[in-house]
Image 1 (cartoon, helix red, strand yellow):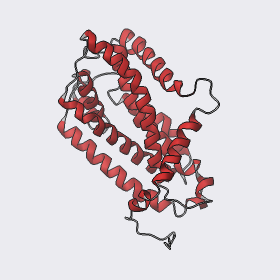
Image 2 (image 1 turned 90 degrees about the vertical axis):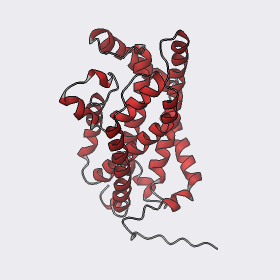
Image 3 (image 1 turned 60 degrees about the vertical axis):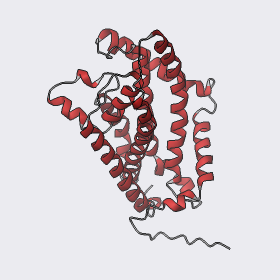
Length: 277
């Protein structure tokens, strides 16, 4: 008979990844629950995953494409904005949803034991499902414009699409669980998440290409760890975009750091958060 010893005391650098693997069925259940709860008691259900980005992209076409006259580097405007919305929405969603891991699941954490990292991991998976659904609409538009000759993918770079999405998911999880760990004591940080993500989006080439940013501001924008993945994603799909090697390396280092330290802080806070939540 297998015995499991549960203790609040553990090594700060023990990430418990082997223990998380044993709960893969629970990860699947939480992933399904997250997706179902989001659209429960709604009329259109998962169709909102297509309607929201479509309406947002049309708004961007009007505001940024026609009024502000921002360049899309020859990529059809609606396709440019929908692809940018999809990839940014995946990243920002992971930050936002993971930032409330402790506060939203306190009732569950206080009743039963399981590795707490199950929740953030299941959030990434449910986010991937939403992203895949949104990309179906992007794919339809993409094929249409591809047949018209309006876009041309960079075939070798297409191999980087999945790694880019994986990196953004992990980065979003890392940033999110750090915020979640801090909000167990400082609740007002939750209010700043939406505002901070809005500012972060405008500092990321979502509604404009990096080619339109010049001077010292260009270097500053390359320091944004989300910039390089977004530009690489756009380059792979449309053959337009910039790849800055040092920015991409910095992005990977940043992702590794926030994931490692995020999990470390997460494991530390989970021992005492029930006393403060």
